[in-house]
Image (cartoon, rainbow, N blue to C red; front, top):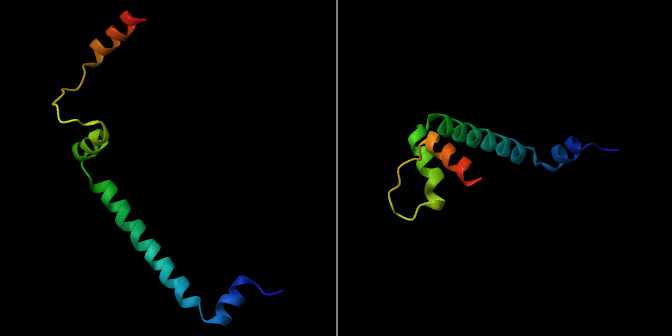
Length: 73
């Protein structure tokens, strides 16, 4: 029984597998570097985009948010 490496090697498709591996590695490195190089403010701004309706809102105070959630219970 032939292995997949024998079939790919005999059909001349080994070059495509190598190009795909290099392309995957390149994209992985670029995405990793971009994710690690992005500053925290940009990440927070992007996280709020789906909920942003254009009105400016200051971040809630953690102490008052805890107290108000206890009062509502």
